[in-house]
Image 1 (spheres, rainbow, N blue to C red):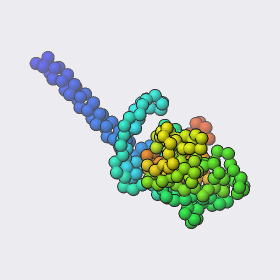
Image 2 (tube, rainbow, N blue to C red):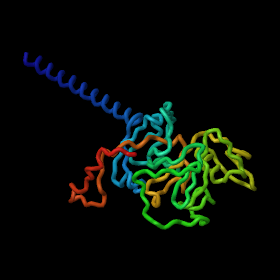
Image 3 (spheres, rainbow, N blue to C red):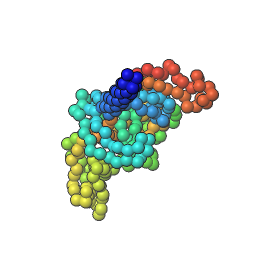
Image 4 (tube, one colour):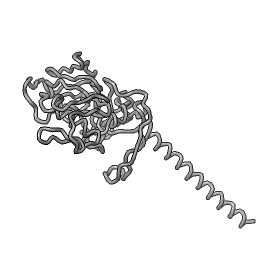
Length: 289
């Protein structure tokens, strides 16, 4: 009788262990599914969106509104060891629009997530005059927490090194620059070649100019038909933001979500021994807008 009780007790423990393992597997699968399709957490390492988003803020992003994507990359977390895999996006409820705070993969390095404000979408024209943004000739209303850290204005006519596209001026007096839309025809010699190059390479084609002629994937072309919508992103910390004024457009393919709220925040400048002061309690739960 004693042996039977021990045997039954052992079986009960194994059953409970199996149930526990199954429960954790379900929880992990649900968490991975939510992360891949609906909500994901992001950390903000730079001040380009101050004072809307601060260095040390941890954000929740809505991945569903723009169309959730299946994983694009498999590898070791927090490293670049891994490989890309085929992926697809479910139909979006809508695409990014003006004033959205958008999370996207940095076009120059898709391993990095960037957060900026969308100021113009496909088919719109961006111009900046003395730090004031105009979209399609209309003044763009600054977000409530837009920040300017310098009163100095780069003069019109001065070409800032590294500006996109070349010839567009500088960060304070910029453009006008047209944001390409899917289906647009970009004619060589009529459109700034930097714009064509940017859009072509974002669509995973090669671009070259040789002997005054344009080559795409090694084939000479007179024009390029845009394959996807593009967006112009700028940081709310207008004078200290590395954004579309310097590296170009964000194609819809790289858009991953919309910033929702701050779920945790701490001040990196406060030392750890002042732990209670390090937490920015008032920012927890703050909506991003």
